[in-house]
Length: 470
Image 1 (cartoon, rainbow, N blue to C red):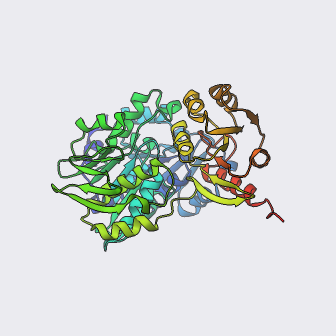
Image 2 (tube, rainbow, N blue to C red):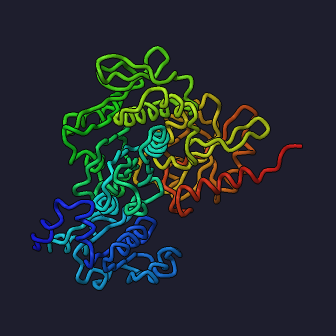
Image 3 (cartoon, helix red, strand yellow):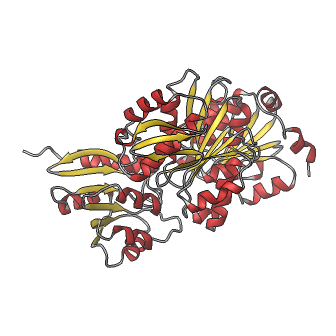
């Protein structure tokens, strides 16, 4: 084992790490968005880059193929030995299984194997707020960025949200603040990742097809605070038992948030206000009634974003202003249109059961639900219980629609649709004035679509294709 190579990079960050990468041979595994960004970053730092992807060359995106003109050697259709020949570092994309035989052999040989998130963090020098959890990550991350833009330091919102951190690692100033959405897949391949603020919003079973068990999934999430110190803070949900249980494990100072109860230390709701108690007295931040977003879960997201932002010393007045102006993110309970008394909402970002349940709980109106896709090993019985009394009809699509049908049981009338366009047409036909048509799939999108964004765009296009009523 090459212990020297591991030890050589153990403490390097910023300028020292960038200098270490000069002339090194680095293998990048996976050429989706983050892999492409990692390749470009490494080439800018004058590393020798070998990249590989399981997809055939014909299925690689334009950005991936363009890397060859930038000096990257690409292997497609698998990960052959030449993709790792002479590698002194391996960077793995989030979608790549970490137990690939080639990666196991490299680890045994002492070659560092890290993820794109870890690479970007080592190259940068800015402080990081890292936000993870099963649901609400994107909304909380974007909102935290909006809150922090009310102060003077530069702010970058990136990570699992769609903008790889590597794409900005060389240009973002060291005095700025990075707000990063981080996934369990990304955290699996971190080694020294050290956010000044680490937030875990909630924990329910997800990605069990990758992690195997809920316990292993939680362990991956807990890596977000593994390298914090007592000078850092960990933001945790006091109302979520699995998340709250992590408080005894973090080295950071715990800042709680709660929608349901007052706290001795943290951010919570009291007398119709979002308030903070961090310095011995209660400070009002914003009236709950000024939060535009629908649903109790979105109030939790606002509490978490406030807790993350207060670490910077920002005052309540700009926080209140930014919270009141925030209108949410695309594909997350996104209003599309009203048509003949029916409201259409796009919640394509709901890629697990818990997220869809939260979406259903956001509406008092009867719901026509469009759901389905690749289920990621989940059980759907809890969705059936949540749908009772809320969902008047379900239109099911995708690979695991039969499993969802069994989970819903006889609680909800269901029909199958072969495409998004037909699903929207069936939902419209079933809807009555006062109903909500909600796309909230509870599943991943990759059986039928390139991404949840692609799926949401297809839903919106189908809804907007309906002509205006006479």
